[in-house]
Image (cartoon, rainbow, N blue to C red; front, side, top):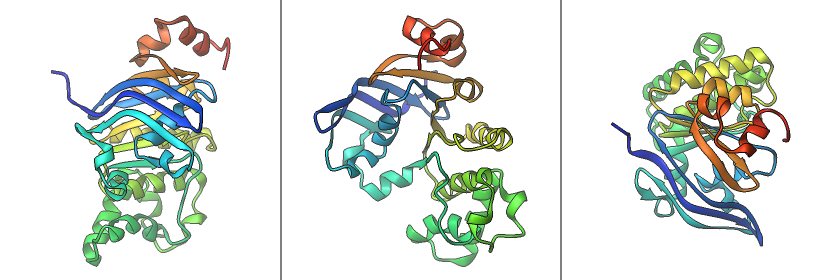
Amino acid sequence: MVSEPVIKTVDLNCFFGSLQVLKSVNIAIPHSEILGIIGPANSGKTTFLRALNRLNCLHRTYSQTGRILLDGCDIGKISDNLLRKKIGIIFALPQVLPVSIFGNVAYGPKVHGTTDKATVSRIVEEALKRAYLWEEVKDRLNEPAVQLSGGQQQRLCIARTLAVEPEVILYDEPCSGLDPISTAKVEDAMLKLKASYTQILVTNNTKQASRVSERCAFFLMGELVEIGPTKALFTNPKDKRTDDYITGRFG
């Protein structure tokens, strides 16, 4: 039985001024899938990711055509606050708040109206556990978040996203500045979150995409060239351009 898509784009075209960055992209992403998105620089990967929760709209010259659906509802009909609660994003550099570890994770629930201290504490603990950070920080929750290592900060950002109970988590090169050990911990957290969340990973690291994703999409010059099961895409791509990229002939 095929799951209904959580995210679906229909003929999505994205523009910055007169420059078309994405060209008629059609993707359906079911619940509990980790979708990898690969491709060379300036292929439209990050634009696609940021279109899903309307972050591109913060740019004055941005426009788009086509539709983006979340659970069958056009995201244009969802308020910014609710949309970004449902679709969280983890950036390349950890965006920790200049407050304590606890305060970082508690921020979202408080903004959305949760004020009971016991409830907030429970949410913080559960989010840190789901991000596989709790055991490392449970005795230092009141310390500044900036004192954490880069990998810990990135998992803290995942915990902060989880604290507002999203449906979808977007990752924009989440391990680009991390060492291999920290990268492995972030990837491990992603794999363990798979049962409960739809995750979309933009990465320039094809090996990371092959390790983490179930399906993978290859973008080139604004076009979705190919999408399919990750193993098949990496071992027997249907399009020569995909094969050329994966084997390092360009990109």
